[in-house]
Length: 120
Image 1 (tube, one colour):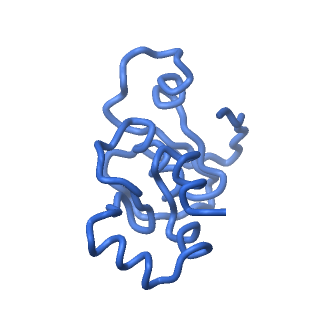
Image 2 (cartoon, one colour; image 1 turned 90 degrees about the vertical axis):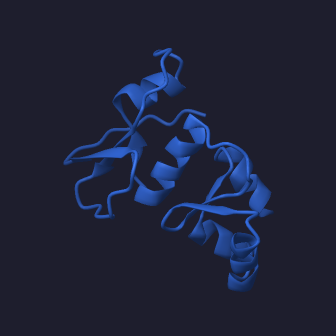
Image 3 (cartoon, helix red, strand yellow; image 1 turned 60 degrees about the horizontal axis):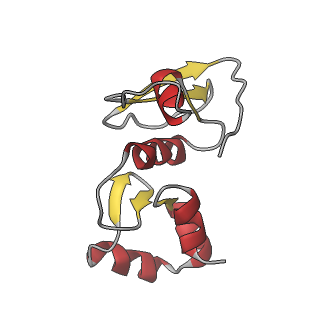
């Protein structure tokens, strides 16, 4: 498997853990220092230099908040094609115990119960 498999499935985003499962720390550092990858959130990288799409911003938020995080409200509706206007912010619901630093452009709601549906 290559890092491109993760990136392709996640709108060009990869987590640090995903990157280090396939690349060395030195390789990741080299990609960041040369500007081939960009840091979007702590531990989340954009693997190309193109524009940051809404889908990429959504993936970056999900990767930052980790397993159990799910798109919510307008963000989910937009990416499912229910809402036609791109939301200004990414809305994410996370299980209550999840604690991560807040990041710009993302609204987070902690939920005691969080039922999710996975869509591609």
